[in-house]
Image (cartoon, rainbow, N blue to C red; front, side):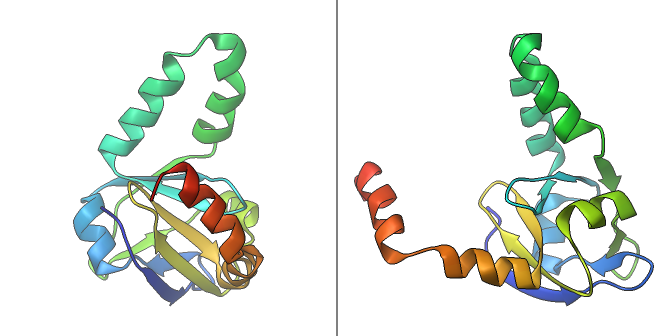
Length: 139
């Protein structure tokens, strides 16, 4: 399970160090794609295959938009000896990544956020909105 929050800087070439705990959980090779809410999703090979399988099982009329969204700009990432990966410009632009980024664990995936966007997202959550969802989970 991927958990935690880690602050890092992205260099001018688009390289960033992946938190060591995430590298352990994701493996030697993983996938980065556009995510929801303006972030990037980082998936292990198992998670990637699971996403592919679920989308492939849908009728094409419903799947084609998801296929284009998740697969067209996706990249395979292999960390170098320093634990860095290169995030392509197209994905950096999509997520608005500048210098300060935040890696978060989101259970079965990691997410990469521009740190200011991550802070704004967190500020938009209220205890009431979280409590409503928790009620649905009977938690």
